[in-house]
Image 1 (cartoon, helix red, strand yellow):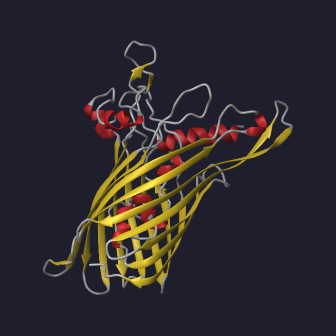
Image 2 (tube, rainbow, N blue to C red):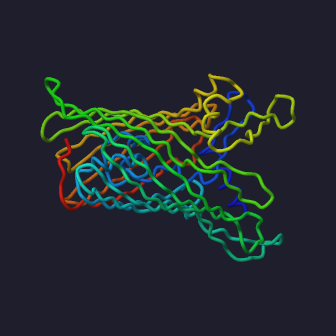
Length: 380
């Protein structure tokens, strides 16, 4: 049972935010695994991907990018050992498939599976009482369409299941089954000459996991799923036919209400979230923090990422992710590399902590494998 407690605390530390006061005021959501960056390419650039060039894993970051995908078909497979500082059997895995139908449109699907490891159960005397394997997963499909030569939009439908109940212990935690929608957009300019180099501008947004609140218990207590806003931009420096450098900046914000209703009724912490619909909560999330506008700004995270590509066959990547010290204190650097041989690409990334606070994601290593095949489309 200790393992369950540890994992619960890690979920809170990794995917919650505290308010600007000394008293913690975390934002909690159901199914926080939906926010985990799945692929090593994005993982090598500070966990960004909303405005980077299209790849097999655009389904998570911005499905609109598939309308600009250079190949007709793309398959991606990911595996990320998770929280290796604390346990050795928690991981995120998944696959994706994308099909560019024609010059204007594409569809894609993906599966993400989050395994929380094996839970060894004992009674009060330490005698074994069996094991449980808790897990969460999502299955989704998207369609993207070019509205012009340089801009596309996409929509995604997602099924989410979160099973955290221990059946053999007669747990009162029920499995959660729900649906959510993503709305995204992506801009990619034509290649333009800037004197000594050519360049391409990119921009994108994705509002993901728009869906109803869920409950893990028959006794009530609804939870918001992690509706999230990603917005970012980037620029590709095309130095010559062999060398390209891409720089990207991305911002993220949970579109979930900050706990702002005083539990004691005296206007002081601790707080609970206001009981409003998920749709109202999206708009309230921009102005409900007890600490005012300054606290709202601290609920944005930002990341910088860079990628150097040689002849589209070898890549080096670096990135930095930043979160306010009062909102979770996730600060880390990332490094990554990619290798391409014919239609196969292998990517890997490594994360190391940059905060004074210990980070359970320290030394996270991600692996991604992708395959591109079929007809080639003109990219620029």
